[in-house]
Image (cartoon, rainbow, N blue to C red; front, side, top):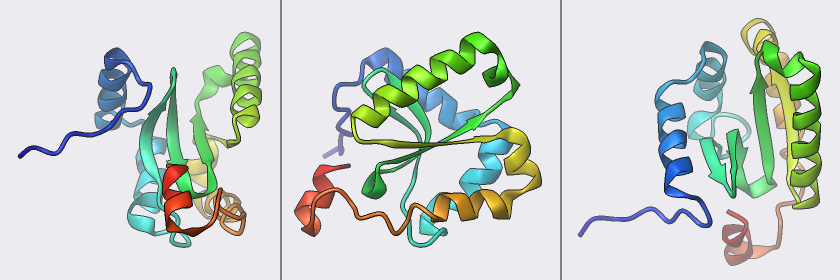
Length: 137
């Protein structure tokens, strides 16, 4: 019997895009993913290129509802910066925390980036107990 993934509220188009992104990470995303995968950072479990509603998060830690976005240069453009700010506000209102880092920070200052991410580990997970924390994922 084949195990099927459950994609809550995610369109098939977004699912395909997400899978493509996972297979074609930017150099900075690949470096950060190597540092995060397998609970290597403070036992935090991350998902790479995670889809939620109409969004794709570069990295997502469900236990802490932490989104890490690795931004390229186009995120400095005024229109894109405004879109990012609106997206982050919406996600904040949904209970997520978004941490934005640049490609340059990941490639040149990885230990500092990992410290920033790890600072979110002490945040209490949503809910309590095994069933409640699984519900947040």
